[in-house]
Length: 227
DNA sequence: GTCCAGGGCCTAC
DNA sequence: GTAGGCCATGGA
Image 1 (tube, rainbow, N blue to C red):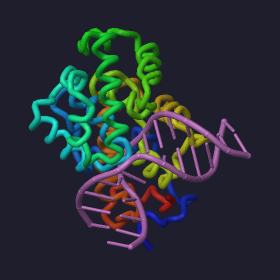
Image 2 (image 1 turned 90 degrees about the vertical axis):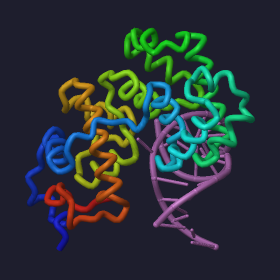
Image 3 (image 1 turned 30 degrees about the vertical axis):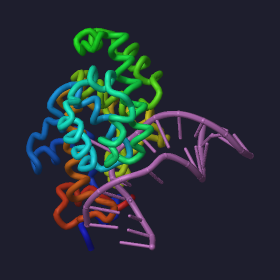
């Protein structure tokens, strides 16, 4: 029987910090968002919606090739110029509009100045981001955590998959409930939030796939194999 | 050919 | 409030 199929009542379940420490011990510090600048992090956060990161890398490289490196460039470029460059990220017409809407708002509201933007109180800034068309909670929180280094835990499909398998879930399967579940159980630490989420993504790409690779999994003994 | 990948919006009920 | 369709590429 794979380790992750062990009956859950026979398991001793550690807390979330314990899970993080197991992943950290296995994979090492990942401290990450795969983007060079704050502008790239924000662009990548929008482009990665519902698509594998590899496709985002292709799009970012094409944008760079055309000299579109910043949100100021995105705001200035015509939509018909941007769309073909980001074809690899699926729903490219929608994403072009999302990128331009965010870039325009960033320019008019904060003059493309991240420091100015992140001096806004977090709840107010998050509310502003969520009011933009095309930015939902995951994208907004990715920008706050990874571009702004603010203590906002990001919930994504990987996080839900892994912790559902571990049977560590909030009562309700909604974004705010998941976020509250993590926030209430972890110290307020953007560095921890960053690396924990990075560990989850890395772990899910390698081992906690739709068909899990239980034999090599550092969490296998904790996981009842649920999906 | 089929399935799925780091969402979010909109509509119908 | 919630389920389901839509968006529409690329790699396994």
